[in-house]
Length: 123
Image 1 (tube, helix red, strand yellow):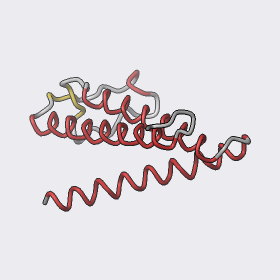
Image 2 (cartoon, one colour):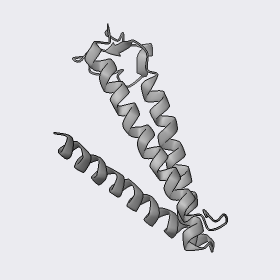
Image 3 (tube, rainbow, N blue to C red):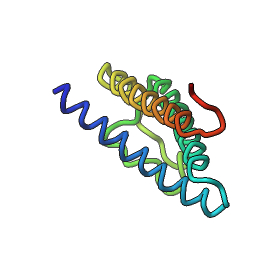
């Protein structure tokens, strides 16, 4: 079970880092920046956003929408009442686990940004 989780996490990390690299290099080359500099800025930005998202996922409130709630409708909550329920232990655990994944992904991308940043030598 742990091996499968590590493989899924590695695949997710590779997909996010490769997508960030390709997109940031394309934008950087379009702006006339170097490849490594644009990649490091892209890693910094996406890593910071993932850290921020992980913080907000962990700090969800104790109230969740009902499973059979169709949503807020076309005009939002103005004309429709929403059915709410208290979060179960599974909901809280899932929020914390998702937060941990986002925070670790964000930290790894920021480390990749520091490694690819050519302005400051690491050693």
